Image (cartoon, rainbow over all chains, first blue to last red; front, side):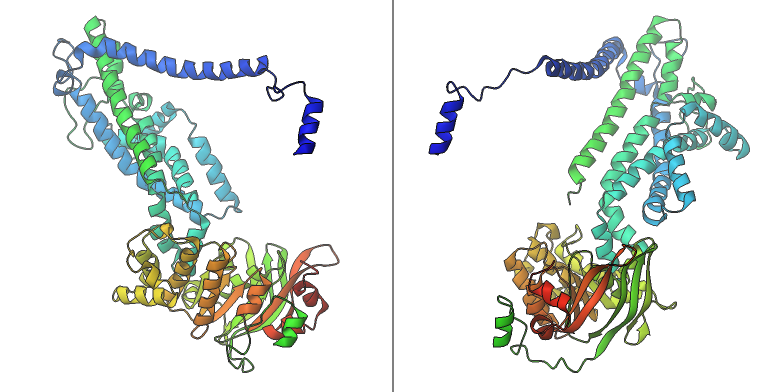
Length: 301
Length: 282
């Protein structure tokens, strides 16, 4: 102690030796730049939300989901066929994409030998597929699913196309969830005489389900807003009935919005805004479920 | 015992208090000329050893000497590492462990393993124990199996009232005993332990060591340990491995000496063993 105090006294003029220098200008500028970028992202979303809600508020009532669209009478027009179409479309897409994506992810994570060139090629291509523009998937759906396979231009073709579109995203997120299960769990299971499939089915999958569910929902919420591939598939923008079978014609919210925006009468603009609010609400619900799943069931090892 | 005390202080060798005739070696594993490769790299070369029935065999040596690699050959866990390959011969009761007809799943049902870090499944205590029997097709009598395994692993009294609780809520030492119980529940003949105490505190370590002594009445135990005192305390035979650098500068593991534990720790025949156990090396 004595040594310390004597050195302190010799080196410093008073008790303020720990005050430090002021924060340099460069650091302050950097911090402001960070915050500004954040503000841009949030502010645009907030402005958009405020705009569509204020514009669409007048028509955010039961008519929107109780009535069918109408070209002649905007005061009675609704978007029931589009809302139902979107929900069916999402359900079918989920049905196609989740099992396929999870099985592909299991193969890549648990079985594929990464030293083999074809597995590396496969991995690289899945990354690439995730970046292909959705309109290209629309062409694929039109050319292969609708024409060559001959499923026509109904709900099932739309769902299959959207499933292909988000499949890479589902695979990538499912792989991450599977990879997050520690290898020690697999070893523990195998050391007890479990087969590889038993290990995957009873240990790896149950532990990665929250992650897989979260990733899949986020992937679907990308699909819900897609219009381009559906336009390519010739999904009608004006459909005044709900789809009743897999091959029925259908419309979806983004298409209905596109249709209304293009109308000349201002009432349809209001309708478009209220439909946008519905679409965003569906999206927010899906994302909330994803976040809830993640927070609630996330495993900590 | 006094001569042991003088040659290596602070080490008590498992001695007359556990009377057994370890001269009569009844071989379970017979290892001859075993080399293990990862790709082209030979991690361990030329291992010969015989592991006796209902004995505790310890494998000691510095890091990177290949003792864990050898251990993982006994239940073919090395198969899981891409590019890993074993040359030479290991027999289990005379049957070639790496023979073409051998199913590694069947091997692992007979030869259980406990790992360095306790790795209970994120399930209830009950389900952790029942997992092994279940994947092996057992459906009935699970309560009895669970109780028996937990009792043998000296954990029953601590957990009998909370079998439905998540196993991850147990302490580290309890988790490791749970992993031992989980291995026992499959009714193996051999239990391999890969540094089972290295993540545990001294009290938990003592409990596991006592447990090993207890279990060696019914099971053959092979343990890899960094802790020489532990090898001296629990094992009947000790294998000392070391890492050597050959002429081309490649490091690989070798078995230096394998003998009764009391001899390894009092009168080793190899200079390297003596240097290691007296702390002059490693």
